[in-house]
Amino acid sequence: MMVIMKKGYSQEEFQAVLKRLEEVGLSGHPIVGKEKTVIGVVGQVYPELADDLETMPGVEGTVPISSPYKLSSREFKSEDTVVNVRGVPIGDAHTVVIAGPCAVENEEQLMTTARAVKAAGAQLLRGGAFKPRTSPYSFRGLEKRGLELLAAAREETGLPVVTEVMSVRDIDLVAQYADVLQIGARNAQNFILLEEVGKVGKPVLLKRGLSATVQEFLLAAEYILKTGNRNVILCERGIRTFETATRNTMDVNAIALIRQVSHLPIIADPSHGTGKWALVAPVGLACIAAGAHGLIVEVHPSPEHALSDGAQSLTPENFAALMARATQIADVMGRPMFQPAAQPVPA
Ligand code: PEP
Ligand code: MN
Image (spheres, rainbow, N blue to C red):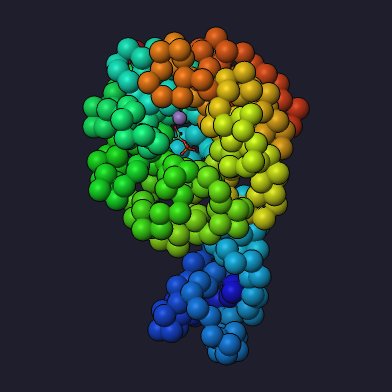
């Protein structure tokens, strides 16, 4: 439910509504707009609540939110949410690209990749330090050393860093280094992790679960939003289907649909969505055309030697070619590629 405040309501009236909600075990999430102030109410709403609230001074009325997801819905907030990551806006009328290796493997691999993706126009750097692997015998990431290397790459290139946090155990450590905390597909319904990551307050990149419906995906986002953290970026990364010719099936439908039903930014991961490097560019471009606010792409200086996801990693040359095409499609779609302001030249 949403509580709509009257024009010219007083602070006391506003606070009284929030207090009333708290008294009955509900939480109020205000959006103070230029035209209107509304308070999203989440929790088990009882039948007489609307009547109770509508009699309070300063309250214009209440409106039910019909979807099961509330804070992520357009019914709750009609304007697009823009998540600002160190000056890079995700969710506005621009396109952004996050690129880097699947896993941070060593200094040279990461620095070479970071320099290459920056030169090609990527605005953020990705790289896993904690890797969820199907087999416990596969390379599982450099952990703290990987995070330190990401911080060094950010220092040199200026690119903000996106990296995965797999467990509540590691949140404090990862949050010391990351600009965006990534929740991977395998953890997308780890509800305690979602809440704890939300509480950090930093932007969260939430991947869609391997077999999550759009509704389950948005309900997962709801766990983060409910902590008061509004900085959620959704990521469509393909879903499990009967098809085995590709690693996953990229659900382009979900991108277009989520743009309609949610105000949250949504980006696409054509690397995991296809599993095949030659499909990354065509499918990535289709996702931008479908309305994605950006892409997250795996790049490796030597994909055939990659310790994870080599088959879907682009070489720096192929990534530069994708950026050129993505820039064109983004222009056609009226969502030009975001250009970070030139760094001031030190005197
Ligand atoms: C990744 O980004 O490298 C990754 C493991 O992605 P996902 O969780 O989507 O499989
Ligand atoms: Mn990967």
